[in-house]
Image (cartoon, rainbow, N blue to C red; front, side, top):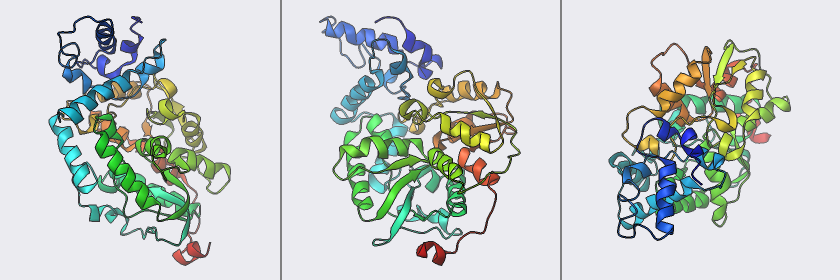
Length: 377
């Protein structure tokens, strides 16, 4: 097909990057037809730089009438560069080295992964004890000061709902971004290590506030032996707490909120109604940007873009769309979206918060259970 619908929705193309999904498919088509055999595929027919501009948001595949899986094709070519030639953009190469060495892309000390919990007395999972929820924190909420507010909000929600939960001290990066960068070996190594660690503990389900963690644990870890779990993202989980009256929300002071849908929640997993229902329960009027829900515009972080040294482009387009709604606040569902949109926002007077933070502030406080009471429960 040569319709060009992929161009119209591709965040990288619209931001003026080297990537042109239509041209990429036409280049592959000529090779399949036996043309240009003397021209290298990568850095010949297809510019190498274009391959590293894809955010894997999957908007192109969603609108393609021929159902061409363009992101998968790009990842395959990245894998060739990664595993056969060891070629990565500089910032990404550094993040991959860190993840392989210490289990997170920023090279932070693994021993400090749970440091954010010190004043909260968050339970650390122990073998032989049953937990209703294993809270998968993720690297951003473990190490990034701003994203840690999401984790702290989740702890408050768990406790107000009397949820028997714990976090896993041995948690390491799930490495979905490494897989999308073509570093399949690192992804599989991380997956097997995480699955091995998870197998030590008894829990009913995993809850995480990172859509990338959610998508990986739910849809990709089952590819490995022992990797099948009940996994829910935090928005779905919070919605269930409200429906079962385990938490009650009072009206938030955030009257008009623009909601940014995360690609790996909405487009990849169909989670669209839940965040809107949660925000409405908090008394918010939701302002929908031009592109929202299943057709939401990407923040620019996915596909390992978060770890590449690039100027703001995609996130600048998205933050303008959100501000054009006239909303006084912006709600997100992902720590990466939070980072990208905050970086792109020149108007710091418009708060950007995760839904968990909004809920934690709106929750009607009741007495928290003591640790002893939680253990008896």
